[in-house]
Image 1: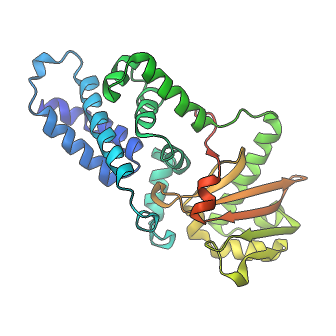
Image 2: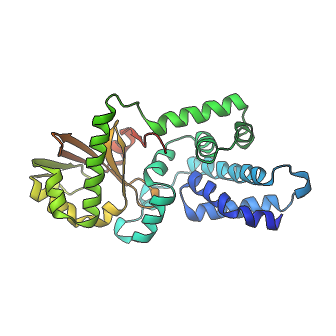
Image 3: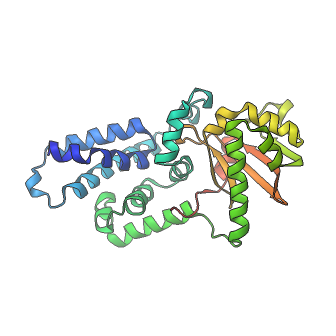
Length: 282
């Protein structure tokens, strides 16, 4: 069992990371899965990898339920963007995706486990059902509802949507690199940046003009490194999510191929009302 577990450890950690959104918690879940697995005779297990995945999923489900029952204050969850290492953020973006973690956090524990197992790791629904202790039809329904929330509302104008997403992605990339020339190309001359009471002090709630917004944006490169393009109320926008924990949302309006408005939302009450999605996964 020890040899089998070691061979599957990276896979189990990847499953747990997507379910829990935290590398430290994922390591704890894998360790707990090992403690449970160590008591089992491997000869009685027909599919060791599938069985270990199910055990790990059950551990994660228990942890997600405990987290929901005793929610941690958001201030304790979100690390200041300036304190997050760029390398760690790059690894997170490549391995999981901040926007996906943010959306998964909004699912019920059972929905999250079902979606991660089936849609991200192609685990058969028979095994998904065993992991969430539901019937196969119920497990399929859990995954389907989660999939709808992850993908968001179907796009009515794919070409326009894709164009807007490219502009938002270019804005985020230029923000990370402090690329003033590109920012000025992307921003409309009379662009307005608005922010709520949590995102900015009263004296800086509104900024107007491409140069002013671009200069301000360059000052927040660290926050941009914790950003990722997502669907915000059905349109391309940006989530700021250090370590995958939602800190703020940028709702972006585009007119004539340039960004005309940026609304920065960080108030928890407002954030809870924003519809977030990732869109179709590759």
